[in-house]
Image 1 (tube, one colour):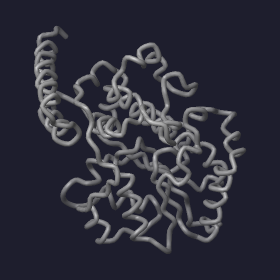
Image 2 (cartoon, one colour; image 1 turned 90 degrees about the vertical axis):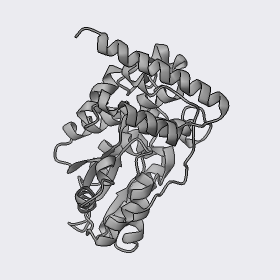
Image 3 (cartoon, rainbow, N blue to C red; image 1 turned 45 degrees about the vertical axis):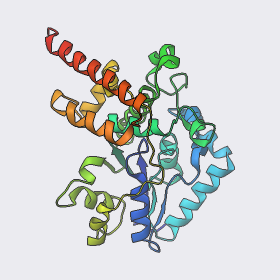
Image 4 (tube, rainbow, N blue to C red; image 1 turned 60 degrees about the vertical axis):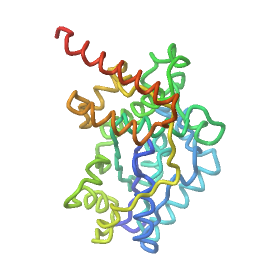
Length: 303
């Protein structure tokens, strides 16, 4: 293998610009790198292999996974960086570190949990019959942290289930950083990636992938790449406060979800993610009233 060539894997929940990363880098480096997005779909089998420990090598029995890893080895052997931007790879990353001789980088790409969960909810990720459904972890799966949610899972709405998804994958991303301290790791916030002004975060991300930053890459931030933009039924975004582990992780990753952000979050959720028929407007007003009452209760609650 060429010493300079490494494979970079994105740890992400999806719905946080991985499509944009894929298209932007693939267009900019068509010959010098191999850039993919969800290349083997759910063959990494998150439900079975998340935190699988000694069982993780069983993944190699799947010919799709084995051939995929062989392809990455060939790419690195040609001296070309490899980048995998899709979300399903996360359970296999400890295996990939070993199989690729440690020639691996991690980019942990995170986005505000409210917006991520609503975006996932628009795709009904827990009410499908395709490859996404087969990769959608639940509290009953052996490797998850939030097992206490199993008893209430059937009563949880789609948005709440997607908050679970956000929490599990991002907790695992932090675990990977601790468990593999020799693997170069970069935490990237979606909001910083697309912030106006100097593209410092984008530059760090591109260079972390072993690629050369250019002005054209900075200009690409103005381009929207989303092949799956949809809307969903209204839900109360403040349901996130039912899940202390999610709120704590959000703060750790730079999303305090404080009162100052409430109006902005509410407006964004309503305008971007929720449908607006007459029935939905009535329900939205009811949810808005409940949110205001909830904020008043929290303000009056003794510390």
